[in-house]
Length: 186
Image (tube, rainbow, N blue to C red; front, side, top):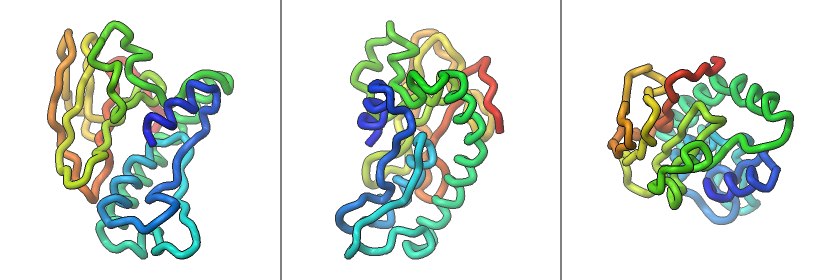
């Protein structure tokens, strides 16, 4: 869903998202937890399903999905004003959820990267998108210092870009980083 949402943003449709936990067919606890984490970073977030599938609401999926949903929704609400500010700054045009190569066009490592994205130019999301992961390999573009959005800890300060493995707990928030010099409304 990440490349699809980036594409819609490039087509001039910035308020997009996908059906969290999937629309057709049944989901799993892990898939729904990870999708709630990712969905919290979408411009538009909704949990939606078709008739005849298992219930996708967090409380119906059990404690793991509930914990991931609670943590991720709290994160979403903490950055919602920032999202609104990007829409205002862009005057309804341009990208809100975009590929990293938009801001770092000289870094060839970013051209095929579809599992990380920028929200505005300030935040970088790097969710776990493959089954069974408890950590995620994140590529941090060079020329900027990157900090963990929740803890404020410095994660990368490489002039040429670097790969770092970060924790991605199933029942927590998605890995999210802020670029140095950025101000994000909370």
